[in-house]
Image 1 (cartoon, rainbow, N blue to C red):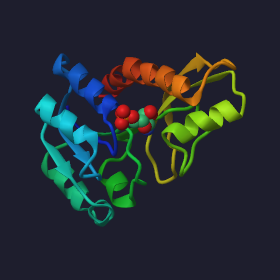
Image 2: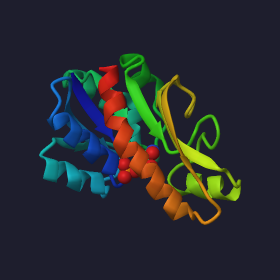
Image 3: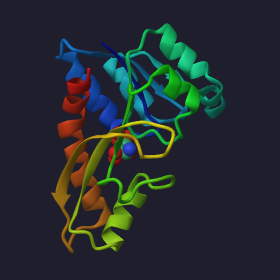
Image 4: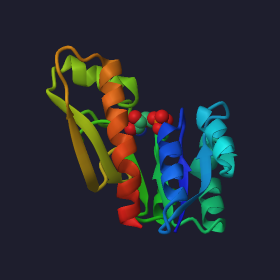
Amino acid sequence: KRIAILASGSGSNAEAITRYFQNSDKGIVTLIASNKSNAYVLERAKQLEVPAVIFSKQELESGVLTQLLLEQKIDWVVLAGFLLKIPENLIQAFPDKIVNIHPALLPKFGGKGMYGMRVHEAVKAAGETHTGITIHLVNEQYDEGKIIFQAAVEVTSEDTPESIASKVHELEYKYFPNVIESLL
Ligand code: GRF
């Protein structure tokens, strides 16, 4: 199965997923796409020798990116730190074939604007005893698609948003590639 990864930032998840599938016969990452021309994920794509494309919000919303994904016979679209809302045209072209990871235990700490460090700051501020990751299919509403997998980790009063972030990243690298493979 051919996998495209959409990422807006550092791309550590994109790298973990790509490396995992280099040793899997079930799937292969054939494209990494970003809406940010300076996103470090593009550097990682180069190192990993995965074709990369940059697209604009307008190209996402107008269906230009969707067309490219269809032309490249992509089977699954993986969102790994992707910060734009997925438009209807992409959802219709890949029904139940778009999967996202959110760095919290949805439905808590989800929704527009809840991403990156903001999530961990909110978890800390709320005095949560646990946080974690949620891997879900993508539908029209932010972070509201069918939940496929969740994993939790303890949060203590000594934790900072940064230490929470690193615990959550560990969960992401450990589980996201396997969960994707289980969907293929
Ligand atoms: C991850 O924490 C992911 O859960 C969230 O954004 C972050 C992306 O990190 N969606 P990276 O770009 O994969 O390093």
